[in-house]
Image (cartoon, rainbow, N blue to C red; front, side, top):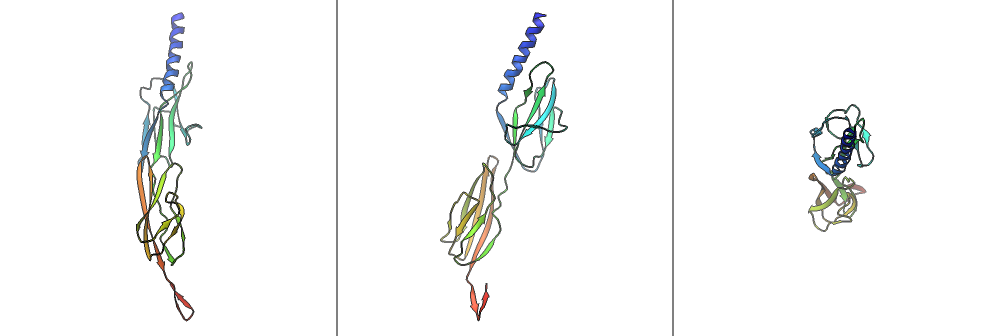
Length: 192
């Protein structure tokens, strides 16, 4: 009886130590294909796959009760398998962070009256680095090169701007054109 109790206690201690070793996070970049997460070295216990957006608050994924789980997340999400045992503390698998590759969107092209500043509408995400670049046109000024929504000033007739987003999965860029025109008046009619 003493040997069985010692093996039981030793087994529970090993499971708790293994849980501490699972603290690292695996980053996986996801574009348009589903991803299958698999438990390695699974022996026994009840499996419940879980997801989280912040790696702290976890929710069970309905019906995800097997040693593998296949998904295509709509947004960047953390995943883990939670394994419960009858006589030992629960354990979790290594956490996987499925990160959606970002798509840059610089907003619409614009035609403006000469000398009018305009608001740029590049998309932004928390934790993602963005940068505006002037590809063509002289005397351009962008208030904040790293903000998607910022003010652009120009004096030339035609500009080409590029909005680039960079994350762990790579970069994505989109371009817009801004054209400045001078109003021409003919007998109280404005021609743009």
